[in-house]
Image 1 (tube, helix red, strand yellow):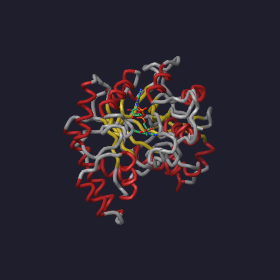
Image 2 (cartoon, helix red, strand yellow):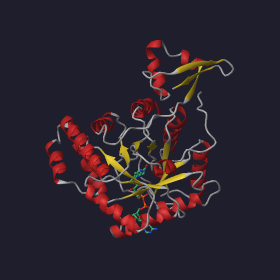
Image 3 (cartoon, rainbow, N blue to C red):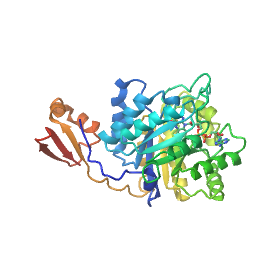
Image 4 (cartoon, helix red, strand yellow):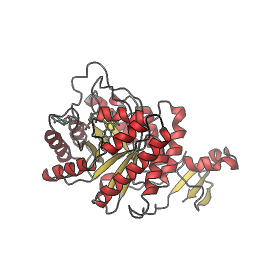
Length: 371
Ligand SMILES: Cc1cc2nc3c(=O)[nH]c(=O)nc-3n(C[C@H](O)[C@H](O)[C@H](O)COP(=O)(O)OP(=O)(O)OC[C@H]3O[C@@H](n4cnc5c(N)ncnc54)[C@H](O)[C@@H]3O)c2cc1C
């Protein structure tokens, strides 16, 4: 349907995060049914105008969302020209299944993965990350990966999966993982994941910046030098965030706690407070030298866009995106009446309000649109 000219060199998030400047990324979860894909693409198109360095798409434990996760990653990458990281969890899958999933990733031109363990059976983790997919239930296969580091080392041991061909990110918990023996042990394990070949870390949510500074110091002591992207969770619904806090066991500063209690039945006030809180949190981290921010968008563009609007000027200018050419079949283009062309542009990550060139490619029977 459409191809974006691909360069021979894979675009790797690891090397992007090592470049100077502030880096932004946005996380989505795949819809449960494919009919709702267009909603995600609308959200992604709105957030693309903020020029993120990359987006990421979550993965249901055991590969339960593979079809929809891959569909979203492929469309964001090839259809909309957004560098996209696929999340990939190891708990509950065998080596053979991991090989099969890796073939699907590589065959779809996906060179960037966030390698995770996933949740334990019956952990009943509610689903901000997974779009509602359940954790694996029952006994795990005997050769299932036990930890994220095991899957990461397995991937790195495969041909053509070195750091110049594939970027692998991992998760880190500023307040320690809830199952960890101790926070120090948890950070030792995280440092090990980096030694096993991770190119960068994305953090679990936290609301107290002090926790992040201690985490950074802890990793520095362990000689971890890869970029660390701060996971930013926006508090837009009191009830939802109460659940997430309960599961992640993160500390909640008194100011935020009071707002959650006060706005338990007032979504509009909760959202306004949450946007302001996140903007202040990010601004302070930025003032302290943090340069990588990963927004858990929960598939909504408004709150993330509002935070970045409030921060305008504080994070520095976003780089201008390089022009890209999208090829759209005549047939598809013609199927859209003039009044709906905006939708077609959005579908391919083009901004109908920005200048663009359209050229007929008669040989391929496609329009080439460059923006
Ligand atoms: C940014 C982000 C995105 C996420 N996306 C998803 C997603 O898409 N899908 C999903 O299912 N979940 C997702 N999660 C949740 C994640 O799967 C859970 O947090 C999970 O409980 C732990 O994953 P991990 O990769 O950090 O695990 P690990 O690094 O394996 O750590 C898990 C626990 O094991 C301990 N540990 C690690 N290695 C060892 C070792 N060698 N020996 C002994 N103990 C060890 C750690 O200290 C920790 O307590 C995401 C989390 C984050 C932060």
